[in-house]
Image (cartoon, rainbow, N blue to C red; front, side, top):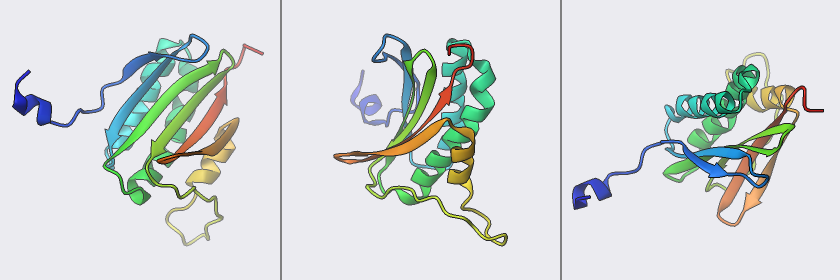
Length: 150
């Protein structure tokens, strides 16, 4: 590899990693830019297709879009990290990490507001969601229940 190719930023290719219970997980480091929401949605679709959980794809794509959009708008780092894991056979966890230590706050927008409904959407669609503090920022996560694995 020459010096020129080493200097170019790594783009958002999904990497397969082992999850804590042996289930595969997918992750990508994406640039903090608006187009990354579409890339995050594709990553979610790829992971769920690999696990044969396509029935969760549309909901999961909606869910990942909100924390990615919030990171793009509010974080000040150059990149964000997306993870899609199966911590247990009955759950899929979607995470978005950035270097901002400010936690997202759900709010009730007025009818005139153009935005501000994203976390309410995540709350309505996800089985559970939350924010984990990290030493260098935070991770916003949401979980979906895998039906048929009760």
